[in-house]
Every structure is written in structure tokens, then in C-alpha cells.
Length: 483
Ligand code: BG6
Image (cartoon, rainbow, N blue to C red; front, side, top):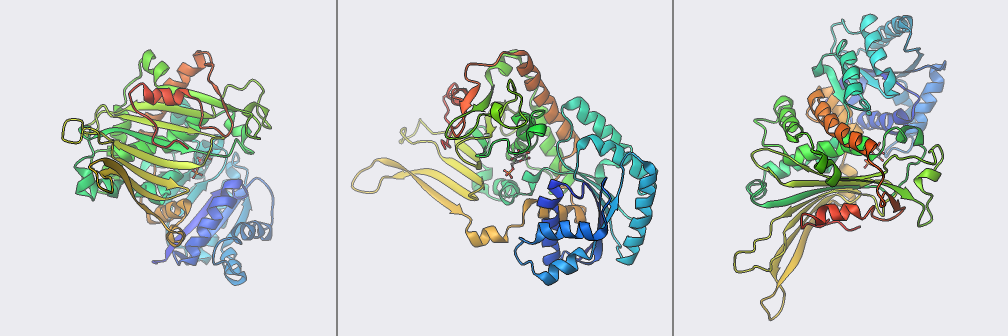
């Protein structure tokens, strides 16, 4: 691997995200040589800590990484420093800047400075502004801002936040993370579609009946009620991950793989989903909340959740996009907590041909399996084995083996590597983000006014409200994945 030189400044350096995802990812990049000698990391948060204390936090978070030894963890944490910082106080940024310059010099960092905001989004704007005010950004190295979700609470707050950070950073230098875009199988949707004539030629409304995106989880709200009570499934999963997966599945072939062409075509998809009518809002979207069942607490009984919470822990729906290939094809989605099984997958259902010599043939289905099983499965028709002429449905699959799973970089690792390389292909641009918020706002606005349906509460450990099945059944379709 080519060595990358960079200085990371991590806001929220003691937080959960940094510990669980970021430090292990940086360490893996270190183990495979992407980060070698000329890099340094400054963690900041409000608390006063000595460097050693911070080193221990980092050490602790990487010790489980495959390949970690005493020696390499020790040498890795030598690149880490800590600086307490009150993000509201511009003076602190001046101090941080001085320290950063010294550290950058010491480590010979001849590369970008990467500001990673792994903390409460309410402070994103302030941090960006103070970085600009304290001359971080006028130096002659590239400056890149990495932002985690949630990016806003609705369109208005997202726009406000964006306007704030745009005062300091240009769109080209802003990297909005959606970790689904870092997943191996998600990154293979586009090659699958456009590198294979046998798929490319049938990937249109003449051949595809419907597309289904399923992101179900077995876990409940865990320790995150404080966040989730203000979010819910639509904001937590649909505004970002599901919208992004939809764009990859339905975008027209871009002129090139360069990020501008690529991202622009993704945006076109979201922009083509027009305003929903009242009828559509009522019929095309389903919400639910888990109640106690199968030994699990109900959502309202979870710690930190109000006992009359109306937050949806399940959402399903139907989008119809308009473009030259998939006009009118229903794109169904469903996602939720405390469902039967963890499953992230896409099922592409092809139209069955009723007019030829095999009118009984069933739909071909291509399943793109993201997690926890990763791979592809094709269901197709063939002659039933034996002395007959009946049709049977067969299934051919390629499931990634454990060894291959091992080779797959973790989503965050890949995305951080992209930031180092300045490659924006797998990040979310503002236009896409604003288009998806506009859709989500309409649904939430409608839900806020509408009474909860009788089927709002679904049993923990089930497949969610029955109305999600009715949603597809109304179009004479069915969910391929039944749990
Ligand atoms: C996050 C959500 O964005 O994605 C979580 O905030 C969710 O609520 C998670 O659990 C799911 O990601 P993955 O990679 O485990 O499917």
C-alpha cells in the first residue's frame, strides 16, 4: 500500500464512535501500511486529560483488532495526542492550531489535515466556524471535514447546518459519511449492474417488476433512547442508508466513474420522486413500534423512553422513481428494530412472462445480500429433475466465505482511506441529502397529524406490522424475504 500522510483532528475523541469505529479503522490502515510514519492524530474533547490517558483509551479500543501485538499498538499510539478544547471558545482553537502545527512538523505530515466530527451534531456549525476563525483553513495543505450523521433533523435544520459549515468549507472538502456506502456488497451494486450485459440489458421497467430493500435488526433501542426518541426509523435508516441504496439501484449509468458524474446521477433519482399526494402518504407508508414479546421489553418500557412515545421503531414504504430505465417500478423498503433477524439485503424481482410456452414460470429474483451473510443469489426456472416436463425454481448463489469476509475492509476503514485519498465517490453530497430530507419531511409531517393505526404496535421479535405486507400485496407483490 502507498503510504498516506495526514494529520487527523478528532472532535469527540473520547466518544463512543471514535472508540468503536474510528480508532480500530485507523489502526487497520496502519497495519496494512496506508498509515506508516508521517501521520498524527490529535483527539480533543472538553475534558482535561494528559496524553497518556488518551493513549490508553486508544490502546484499549484497538486491542481486539486482528493482528494487534504489544509492539504495534505501542508504536501506533505514539502518533496520538490529546488537547482539551471548549469548542465554543475561539481562543482554544488558537491553542489547538499551534499544537497541531508543531505536531504536524514533528511527524513530517506533508498532506491533508482532516477534521473529523465524531460528536453531537449541534456543535458541527460552531466547530467549522471556529476552525475558520483561528486560521486552520488558510494554510497551504488541503483541509477536509468529515461529518457523521445525523445531518440535521429535517430539511430546515439540515440546511441551516449546511449553510454554517459552508462558510468554512467548500462542498468539495466536505465528506458526509454514510457507513452503508463503505460496505463491500453495497459498493458492488454499480459494477454488478453496469459491468454485466446480462443484467444491464434487463435492468429496466420492461423486465423488473419491483425492488425490495430490507434492513431489519434484531436489537432494540439499546442504550440510545436519548437519540432515538428524537429520531425514529425514518430518520435513522431511511433518510440516509435506504435512500442511498435506492440511488445505487436505480441511477442511470453515469458518464464516468468520477465522483461528480456518479453522484449527480444518484441525486437525479431522489429528485425525481415528486411530492407525495395525501393519498400516497396514507397508503404508501407504514409505521410501527415494538411492544413486549418473545422475552423482550416493549419500546415504551425501555430505559429513557417515554411511556406514551409515538416514535416509530419500524418503517416501510413504497417509492416510485422517474428516469429512463425504471420509471414506475415500485421500490419497497422496510426497516426496524426488534425484528426477527438481522438482515440487510436487496431483492430484485423480475417480471414473469405469461405469454410464452411456459406461462406457469415464476419470477426470477436476484438477491443482493449485504449483511450478515454477504453475497448474491439468483432464483430461476428450469425443468424439474426427472421424467416430466414440469418447471421448478432453482437457486444459484455465491456467498462470500469466511476467508473472504476477512479480507473485506471494515466500512469505516474504507471510507477513512477514501478521505485520505480525497476520493468523494462514496460520500453523500448536499443535493442528495436535501432531496432525501424533503421526502422524509413529507412523511413525518403526515404522520404527526394522523392518528396511530390499530396495527402500530408489533410484537418484539416478529417481522413487524402486517400492514407492511398489505402494502406490497395491494400491488399483487409479496416480500421475497419472509424472515
Ligand atoms: C446506524 C443506525 O446508522 O445504522 C443504527 O443509527 C443502526 O440504529 C445501524 O443499528 C445499522 O448499521 P449496520 O451496519 O449494523 O447494519
